[in-house]
Amino acid sequence: MYILNMKNSKFIIDKLGKLFEQGIISSKDLSSELFNILKSKRDEIVFKMKLVSKDEFDVLSKRVENLENKLKKLETKKKAKRVKKS
Image (cartoon, rainbow, N blue to C red; front, side, top):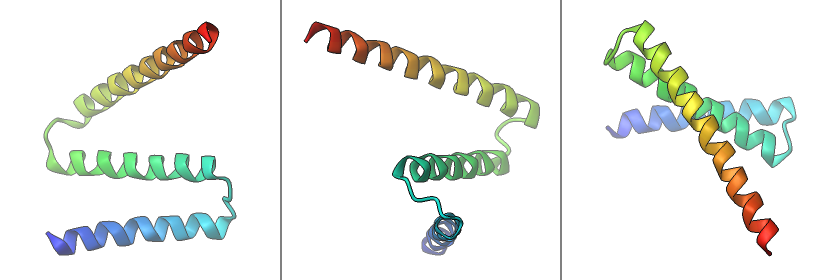
């Protein structure tokens, strides 16, 4: 288990090093890039576990993405209502 964690951390450190080499400086760019790296790694792990077929996986990941977008919209609406009340 420890070796697996070491490989994963090395992977992430290598990716972050490449980002710094490319000159991504702003924290917003860095956080979005890190989020994309972790998301792709998650998808890779789920796909390797063969819990579902590739087609099912694509459909389910699209549904999750749509739900995440709806959640973000609702959170921004909620924040906007709080600001208006103040």
